[in-house]
Length: 363
Image (cartoon, rainbow, N blue to C red; front, side, top):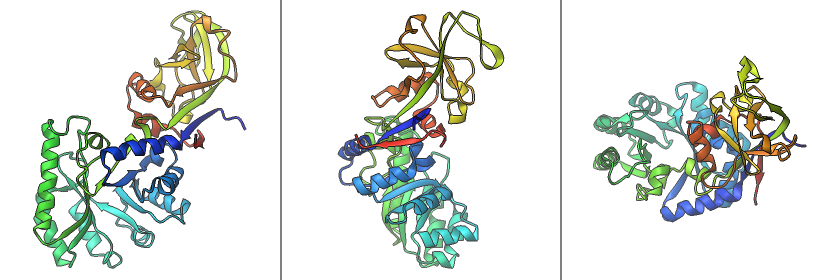
């Protein structure tokens, strides 16, 4: 079968990226973030490869349904799954799922902790806590440590399985940016305060992708890489599509919906990818290269089609059924396209819908 568009995922590149990452943190465990369907790459295939080939045994999701999916797809693999935000903790069904399938909810409020501590099914279940150290997204307030400690001891819980926080500005220098310094110091104080109350902390993590690259936070038990394993130093995926049709146009010729006018004479190449595939109208004005020739996305992105205007000199070089690469695996390809589209690699990858098949390769 010939696919109209496809995302080719090179799993060997994931291995190379992981090996590069471990140079930064050779003695630290890895909690690999696979939320949003493995950042658009297909979570089940990514987890299976990471578990079997890379030895990673812990994974992080955003929502409980992502964790349920992984348990269902990979029933024979024994790995831990953390759910970080959309816990759906209060429903009886969720309590049963967490306890029976060994999925760890990361508690980010005292209300969630209260609910957790009063559930008989969670009496011996690992406690995972996330603190807000300044990002002001999700997390228990750092000033609430005394109250939290009291609650734990009242329920005879003297151990925290995993203590988390999240850095807001890890793309900035970790040892120079004051916000980063403050977050790290606050996390240290939280840990010390809990430990001084005779509550043990088995695991802890603060380092996301940006921090890991700076060897910051690698003194904790875990690192939590996300986008870095998918894109650095190699992008593990290549987005391809095919040419449906090619035709000449004159300047100001109406093209597609809303009769958008061609900005100049040229060669219109119609690609088999559109917003139905997660390709946004916001990408208009960005460039795509094919056989060394640069073309500009023009007009509106259609449900199933994108128009790219190439110079007329490309007429004999671009033909129907050609395979065109939107972004490739070379360093900088994805970042260049994200810069042009005024977005970020996370958003580009996570926007791709299941309508685009994922093809996995080992070479």
